[in-house]
Image 1 (cartoon, one colour):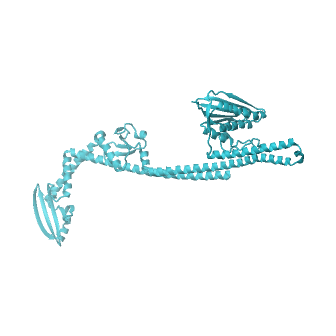
Image 2: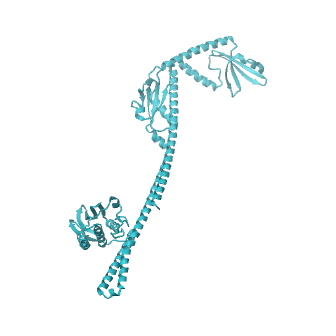
Image 3: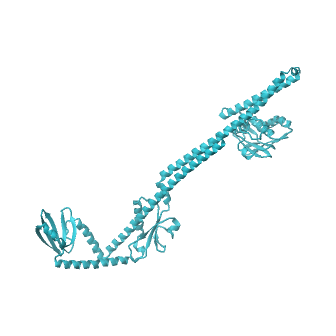
Length: 539
């Protein structure tokens, strides 16, 4: 897949994923907004009910404590009982009532007159038409007694009774006026005397619970100048300290009193609202996270596959070049041996046979290197661990590699400083590790290689440091030098041989031995490989 196609694919999927996330966030915000609106409506309804109950309770309490109000309160209760009883005429001081019972076309009218506890009962049967014609003679109609099918009517055509009723109405007006005046006087009492904090808190709690609001709240009673008079909140201003508040006027029917306001706020309002939509939030979050992880995995897979494809192509090109050289050399040597003139010279024959033998060995080593890489990838190799003196092993490897370095007019320095040098390693594989690192230092030095190999102790580890003054490795390539098949680019000139398997092999072996390898490098100044291995002292 071309690089441009990959970019377009990743961009398209990214836009789609971001769009989906934006839609999810929109719906979450919309759900939260709806919850917020419903919450505010419920709070307002609850506060309205609190205010109404406070005002009703104050009125009832004042009537109980007032001299005439007590009578009114008792009389009110009696009237309520009257509506549900048969003793309709047992409450008031004076009443003239007609009980009308329809019997076909006739009506039986029972007149009951009561004055100061004495009753007079008269009954008369007359036609329904006559009773209907007397409707205008009755002043007040009381409710039907549905269980008996009766109608109770108060008569007004008796002058004596009318005077009594007028007097009672006048007395009632004065009585009600006195009560209203007394209730207005209540308005001048301080708000602290009109409201008990415990009752207010209890009312607020009950009304909020009734609306399904079960979260912590703070409230206060404020005057028109924003002064706090009482409440559960100790600050001066709920708006400033606790965020958004809800407010309602207390005693809205007061006539002359300055207004007071009940304010309430919910410190954990957002948490409460989110808890109500936790299922939507959880589902959306899981969906977004899942899609994000899938997208991340897919992009990584695409990039990895592309890199693998590039590395594979580079490997095939390198392998073709590496194999082509010895094959060409062998082919040319064979052609030369066919020449009769060369066949006459034993020295020339031996020379060409030696070339064929060397190139054949080189082919074998190249094939072995590829096979070893496959074995390491599968993890199908075992190390033969033994206790060795790293100082001695380093000296042995450096001595053997010095021949190749001297051929390029180079030099290798040994700085053996480790006092404790016993390590448990696989001699063959770790020797190959050192060979690879020294060989790379030699190959990537342009002229007259100068290589230093050093050992020293650091805590419970031994450090083996191989340093060169070669071409160096860029920071970008340093991140990938230990990848299998990766080779540091050296331009179009193929003057450094290899498949890119060496450093990946080095890293695998060092880590299997319980160690670690690090790289420090600068372009044009050289590279330093550091190997840390745990010490293993003899018992």
